[in-house]
Image 1 (cartoon, rainbow, N blue to C red):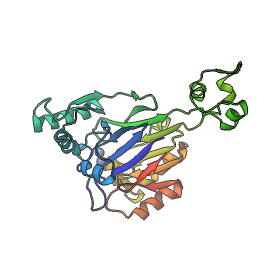
Image 2: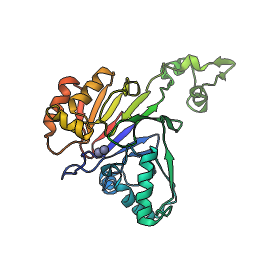
Image 3: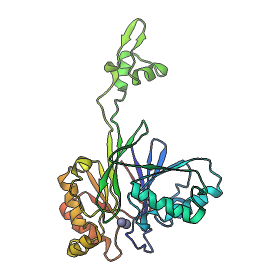
Image 4: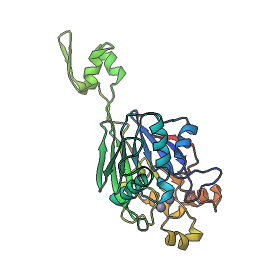
Length: 300
Ligand SMILES: [Zn+2]
Ligand SMILES: [Zn+2]
């Protein structure tokens, strides 16, 4: 299961309703920030999430609308005297910019909290046991951009009717079966296979930040339960989208449609359009589309 809180959903320029980009993903008790636009720390407070258990930031790229919130957040975490190490994952070029930004404010290696920088290349970012994060390169102007795939494995759950039929009492014996180990009751051996159902609940979430094309991204996005992706422009401004290295809502929707995505969430909205016209353009091509708003909370 993944719980997403959209903390900022604007493109380069914020509006009264939309903050600069940031997305909080919660999984198995862990909290991960994807991008950290200016003002993200206050958005974390306003969303009710706060700062606890937040020890990892994934950066899609280093354009200022996606990273300027890092110094403010670190300053606040420093005042709270947190002892946790914050790990920032991103492309090497992205991390270089962030390291320079922090060094400009506090001196090299002297940020107010302990920070680890972990450069990503294509492949696995972390294996947290209950879920994994992988990354893949994305083309967006002259940046070192990455998209991220969150996966939680399918699990086999105990079937209560079979447990009852076989007389397995509540308690540690059920835990043994759930863990895949056989048990013995009154001389009878009960195998996990006797009481476990079919695998279910595996989820795939894909988050793509700014991107100038969807070419080459299909294998990473295929069959995602949810795709979060930018849609900065509408089709009528496709040439402008090309010039600035962004997608149109129609392009994002077509990409979701041909890759077996279940739900599409569009973000990085430009203030030049009404939400309704963006949604209409996407939904014509991919009906299960929605436009993210700040503080939207979505669970998959
Ligand atoms: Zn952006
Ligand atoms: Zn950008």
